[in-house]
Image (cartoon, rainbow, N blue to C red; front, side, top):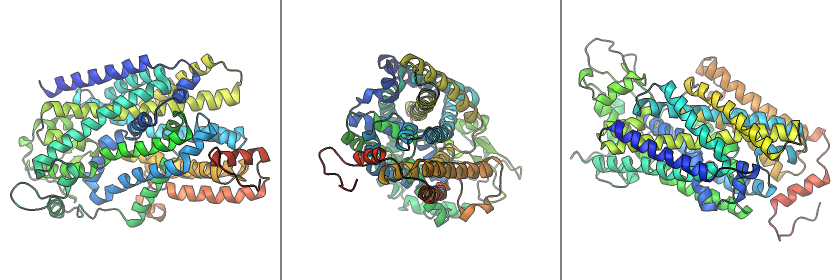
Length: 560
């Protein structure tokens, strides 16, 4: 069978499984819809969290970023994995004990303020829509190549499918669908990694292949070969990267802190039965994520090596069919500047080849001439990665609007059925916004996703952290801090990503992907300054905060 036939088969089979699970586990109550009735085993929740986390940015775009930036691309891996440690230790167990459905729900009750709740809803929507844009872009890229439709059509098809099972199943359906999607995406990612590692280095484990010699008889290490190729083409050495130290630090810190403020990740810890299970879920999620993330540096290097060897200084008419197919949909562009028909791939004004980094992993299996079934498997994995996260984001958006806005602030008398109806209508609206940004994304998939981390780090993390560990933090300080962090980060992103401002004017040399560390600092400074000018929370709130921090059966401080 050819690639298209295999792809239709795999995609149809996996989607049938997802939809079947959604129907069997459909939400019948608001607790089912919001937190899966808090009945998910921590191991299963860890798998679902990993799928929620390993979005299109990880599956599709991260190998490309590492392939293009080399060492500089490692910031995304370090920040992402480190963030789960912060989340599991400092945030998740406490929020689970507090017992609310959403982050805005926690903010509203902890800071005894509907104003704070409303601002938290706005923050959650900004974060979720930004993150959703990256996922819908990833869906469009996969569909456009492997189902041979244009990117816009691919976005619409993916949106329709995720809308169906997300709206029908709610968190309960999404959770068990994400477990299946984790298995699919992990299998789809590791399989080509193993094939290519063996092909290039005779090493079955990709991470070992990364540090091994090429099996071409030269005795040259893969990374040394890549460094040499990069230098020949005018790029910086692969193993040194091209980012400044402050930029690398800022992106790593922003992703770590932003992880602990992402609403669609935090809500996963509300689905387990006990507080201790929330911490366990974080550990399991980190393990399941590591199974894939450990292979990403290897496949990034393999992909870049194969790309250079395949296209550099080769005649255009000799390019294989995959090159022409990606070219037709606009994600590879060859401009023959000197009219000699030879592809000049360099880091100079004479460069004739543009390759969208989002296609690198998807195209690698074809570049390496792997079996057609492996190429199709990669396509199904890419869709699983994008749709699993998109579903979680839809849930956050719908619950923020239905529960935190309508139920808590507009009409307290809403019935469960009315609340569910509003949540599903909100999902339809958010899908429309997701489609728009999927068609007109502000950047690459991974870079678009990283912008959400900047907003989460700036707006949410300080207020959640202070809400847990500083019992005298009041609503005025929280509101001022959230507004400062959100306005700063969103304005910075709009200025540099949408208004095409000169990157030379970056604040401290930090791009929008890493600006969350500055926004977080401003949030903390403003919140801790404003808090001093207003009365502390009531004794009841302070006792509630202390109760949240201490497990049952332990002695609490006596200085209430």
